[in-house]
Image (cartoon, rainbow, N blue to C red; front, top):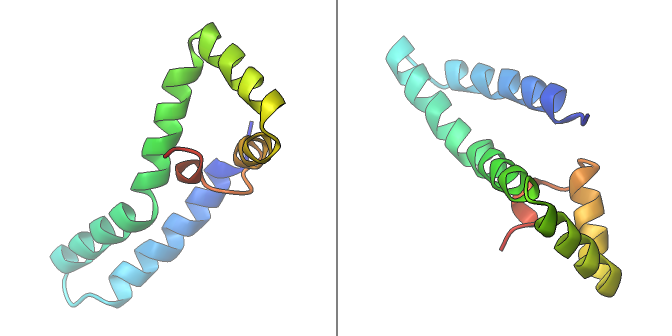
Length: 93
């Protein structure tokens, strides 16, 4: 379990507030929220889903461990990603 859920909930509240504050109508607030979502949330959520889909295969997990054993900077990046210290999107090329 990670802290991504609560962190995203807090951030989404902040961005919804920003979208409302910078809008003059409900429709514009919706458009502004969509832009903020696409800019700040979508890339990391997509990367997280890609990583999750890769990890369902045991050979991918074994490959990941093998790579981490041979490349310390990569191992640190993976560890920091799974510990929620850096975004998922920074793990993927």
